[in-house]
Length: 187
Image 1 (cartoon, rainbow, N blue to C red):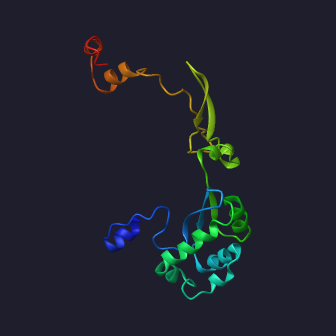
Image 2 (tube, rainbow, N blue to C red):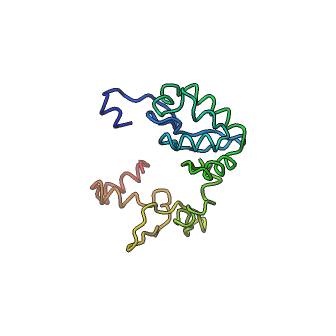
Image 3 (cartoon, rainbow, N blue to C red):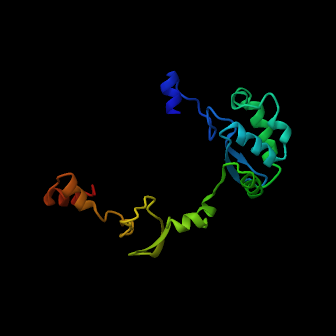
């Protein structure tokens, strides 16, 4: 989006998950109401994509044979693809597309994210002890360093747990000023 803006000076239009310069390169809904994102980044992948869909005739259709033509005919093509994707579940499409080397991936709901093997392997789901409610689940640290593992060491703070520290150390209030604010029910 930024590159297009820099090149043209025009603010980009909202396109949801769609790419402004590559078609199809966006999310589609499967028969089960779950979404898949696909990335048909070039004309070779377009042919593989059409094969995976079982619509080889689309690959050579003059309206869609090149990315430039697909961008020109975006609305018509996306309407067709939306209908096609509604014929199978997300996971059926993932299998077919992956078998045909088409870049794609599931768009997970919250109920699916934290069971994904890669998410678990990257320790993006952790459990930590909380002082009042016991063990709680937390999102792990997304940045991983090979020689310096990062760990979440403390649970989320309790309500007003760090108020004095923030007011005193960060905002420069004195203990007397803080006590006055407490007495006046400001904090």
